[in-house]
Length: 79
Image (cartoon, rainbow, N blue to C red; front, top):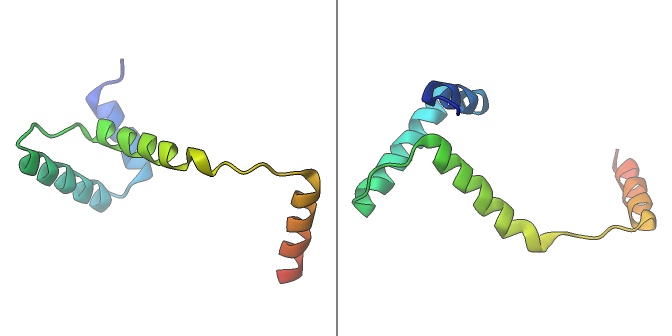
């Protein structure tokens, strides 16, 4: 099982210390408004990622080889 410090280090790789502080403030404010204990940062970030995945699952697009080749040609034209 991961330790609290280990999880914090992993999140700090993704965020600056300032961002981490702001995220902590957001979590604390939400907890105060809901009159609940604040979530650990790792749990909060995990739930954000899961919510993002769920919100974008229906957006999956099927690509044919021809569509991909056409898109690549268009990208090369814009360079």
